[in-house]
Structures are given as structure tokens and as C-alpha cells.
Image (tube, rainbow over all chains, first blue to last red; front, side):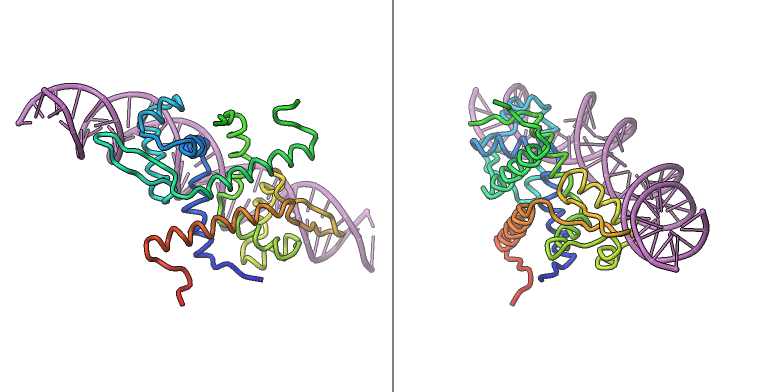
Length: 109
Length: 109
DNA sequence: TTATGATATTCGGATGAACGAATACTCGAA
DNA sequence: TTCGAGTATTCGTTCATCCGAATATCATAA
């Protein structure tokens, strides 16, 4: 029974849990999963003001969830680690299963 | 390229991301992974006031991450879905790998 | 039914993000 | 070196959530 040090719990919280605990940032991660994008394109895609996207990207970059590459005046953002998608998709499946237990269905057919 | 509806993003955020975005709740989930526990025992284990633990458990219960069973006056809490541990462990590994990229190591040896 | 251990809830204050708006910075072309 | 497109930052406000303290509720034994 491994007791996880509180320092590691805090790192986990600050760097990952906290980072994905914001709907807009989840949207950003899914968008970048399709393809790397620059800030303006991302802002247009998510119909969100550019400073808002830029702030969220800064948070994701500080947590090392995305990396950047310059392309002239533009900055291309891409996912650092595809496992973040595995995590989000697992959560979605858990959510579907939990809703099913309550006989509620997403996208019923 | 599946575009995820904003409603599902919000459900994901409210029910799962938000729920694990708190160090004490992560500790609780790991503790319950070892074995089901009642509130008082959990409070003692995590050296945290009982009302604090109770409030966090209420949040986890509302999100269906834990379930309860009565045992006399006590209430036993247990994990609903072991996949939450898979998620947390994957995050820990991502964190380790990210730190390694910066030549920082947890538990060096 | 009353007392006790166990759990849940409420209140108030404090803290932490998020946002809109405005603006500052950066890069490269001319 | 100046301009414009692209990106980042700052400020002030608002809103959500956490906690400690106190207390209420619940279940069972006597």
C-alpha cells in the first residue's frame, strides 16, 4: 500500500488536475489533438477572445501540457504528451457509464 | 475529427475534472483505493478535521466517484470506478516524465 | 426515550482564478 | 526604422470554493 507523499499530490494537482479543470482548456486540448495551431486560429475556432486563449495557453505551457514553436510572428502550439487525451477520453467513458447507471444517455440512439 | 459538444465538455469538467482538482480529494481517492473506509477513520488517516473530510466526500459522492453503505452509525465510503486510479496514475507518470525532461527527478536513487 | 458516537450541514471570511478591456510586446516585411 | 499582424500581459472586478468553528442530524444501545 504505497502512501503517496503530499508533495507529489500537490505537484499532481498543480501541474495536471488544476490545468484541466477549466472547460475552455479542455476544449483547447481537444482542438490541439487534431493539429497544432497558432493562437489566432485557435481563438477563431473556439469563438473566444484572443487574450483569453493566450492566457489559457500560458497556463498549459507552464504545466508542460503544450509546447510552442515560432513561425514568424505566429506561435504554433501543440500537445506535449498524447496521454492527456487518453485521460480525457477515459473520463468521458466513465461519465457515460455513470450516466448509464442512472439511465441517462448522451447522444441517445 | 470529432468535435465534442460543449455540453459534454461541461459535464466532464463538472463531474470529473473539477472533482479531482483538490489535493485533499486526491488523497481521499488514493486512501479509498486501499480499502473502503468510514469518515472518522479517513479523517484520522489524513489528519484532517472530520467536517472537512465529510464535505469533500459529499462532493465526490455527488459526482458519483464514491458510493456509500451504512454500517450502523458509520458510513462506509468506497470507490465507484477503479478507472479513476488509472487516470491518476497516468497523470503521475506524465508528471515524472515531464520532470525528467527537465532533469528533475522525484525520489532520486 | 435518552445518551452517545458518527456524520452532515451551515455560516462567515479568505483566497484564488477567470474574464473583459485596454495595452504592451515581438517579429518580419518594406 | 516604421508599420502591421500576431501574441502576451496587466488591471480591476466578479465569482466560485475552500476552511474553521459551531451546530444540527442520524443511528443505535441502554
